[in-house]
Amino acid sequence: MDSKRVSAILISRSRLNLIARPDGIAQSPKLDSSLIVQTDLNTIWPNVSVKGRTVSEPMLTIGLPVYNGGSLLARAIDSLLGQSYTGFSLHISDNASTDETERICREAAARDRRIVYNRQSHNIGAVANFRYLLQNARTRYFMWAAHDDRWHPEFVAKNIALLEADPLAIASISQVAFVRDGEVIGLDSTYSLQGTVKNNLHRFWQKPTDCSRFYAIHKTQSLSNSMPNIPPFHAFDWLVVSLTLQHGHYLEVPEVLMWRSAPEPNRYFRQVARDNRGCFLFRLFPLLPITYYSISTLGVRNLPIRDIILLNFYYHKGYVMFVTREHPILFHSLRQIYRGLRWIYWKSGLKKVIGAREAPSES
Image 1: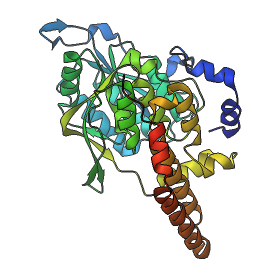
Image 2: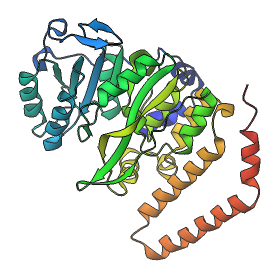
Image 3: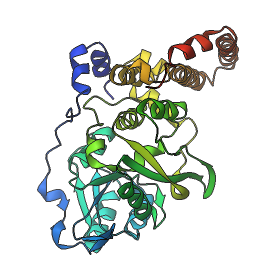
C-alpha cells in the first residue's frame, strides 16, 4: 500500500466527494488476450430451475483472486465446481503468481468450460485484483472466493434460493467455520442483518472481526456500487460491507456450509507493519483510514461511534504489543498503561456520554 497516497486522500475533500458516488469505480486493467483461457459462455450452461422458471445463462459469477495459491487452490476450485447449483461461471484472476498457480488454473480450465482464467502481467495488488473480478462480472449475482477456503455442495444453491425469495436482500451467506490444522476452532459472525440501515450498521460494527460477509453471494449491482475507487488500507473489506448495507439486507443460511482457513496469529499486525512502512500514524492506528472514510460516507448518526472507538483502541494496542513483544520491560509497562486507560474509559462516564450521542431515536 502507498501510505503517502492515502495520507493525501485523507486531507482531500474533493476526493472524498468522489468516493461517495456509487459510480466511483476504477477502470479495469487491460487484458492480455494471450494469457486468457475462456470460451463462449452462452453455449455451455445447463438449464437451471430458479423459482419455477428455467434459465439457460449463468446467474452467478464466482470471482477467485489468487497469488501463489499452491496446493490449496486446487482444493478450492474442486469445491466450487462441485456445487449442486451449476449455473455459474468461475473467473480466476492470477495476480502474476510465481508458483504452480498458473499450471493448476490452466489444467482446471481445460477440464471445465465454466472456468475463465486470466493471468495479470504484473502484480496489481490484492484489492485491485478483487475489484478487477467484480468489474468484469455480467451476471445478476457475484461472490468472491478465497483460494484457501472450502464450500459445502449446497452453499450456492441455498444462498441463491434465499436471495430470490427476498426482494430486500442484497447478500446471503451461510454460517462460517474457521479451521486450523484440520480442526474447527470457531465460527464467524454471519447473523442476518434485516433491520434499518442504521440498525444493521450498528450490529455489523459491533463485531466485524474477520468479515466473512465479504464472501457472501451479493447482488452484483449493489456490490459494484459499494466498491470505492480509493487506495487500499487495513480492513478495506469492512468498508465494502458497510457501504453495501445502504442498499439492503444480509441473509444467513443457518448451518455451516463454508470453511475458512483460520488466519495465523498476529497476521493482521504483520500486514499493518508491511503495508504502512511509509506512514507511522497508520501503523500506530491501523483503523484510522477506515474510521475516516466510514464516518465521512455513512455519517456519524448512522454508526456506533462507541464501538468504533473501542475497535481503534484495541487494534492500536494490539499493534503496539506486537512490535514491543521482544522488549519485556517496555511491553509490560505499556500493558499496564493500556489497562489504566481501559479502566478510565469504563469508569469515567465517557462510555455513557459517547453512547448517548450515537443513540437518537429510529425514525
